[in-house]
Amino acid sequence: MTPAVFVAKCDIGRGLFAAGPISAGAEILTLSGPLLTLRQVRAKGALAANALQVGIDRYLDLAEPGRLINHSCAPNVGIKDDVRLVALADIAAETELRFDYSTTIGDGWTMPCRCGAVHCRGLISAYHLLPAELRLRYALLGLVQRFLLEAWEA
Ligand SMILES: [Zn+2]
Image (cartoon, rainbow, N blue to C red; front, side):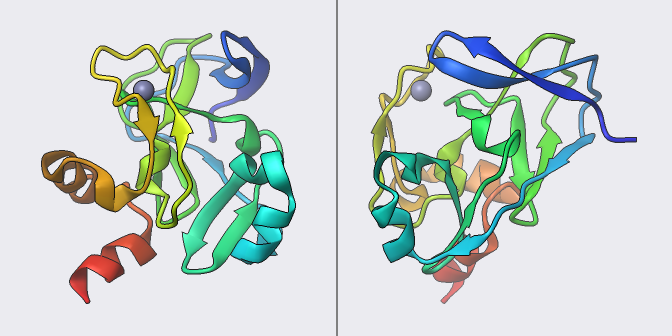
């Protein structure tokens, strides 16, 4: 059974939270939404932050609740197979779920980070700009969008 989540206020607006305990490895949510091109994403302006990149010039305009997931430089969830949100550790009820946006970014999009993690990078940017060690760790965990890995193998 898929663990339940709920939307609530957090320190930076709204976020997605665990309704009950979630076990490490559990699948939480499948992210979905209409497919957009980069041009269509840019036309949406500030709302572009809600688009999940799934390919070169391919983005999902995320529906709720997936669109409300915030970023962390020390994430407790990650995305497998481009759209499956999974728990990276045991997660207690009422905990906010956050993934590392950089595991999905292949374009020039950036955003200042205020996630509060000890090793906060200060800026959310493309996967290829992450430290090599971190790129490798995410790749080995299967948490990197496939188009990003293919770009490195090419
Ligand atoms: Zn951060």
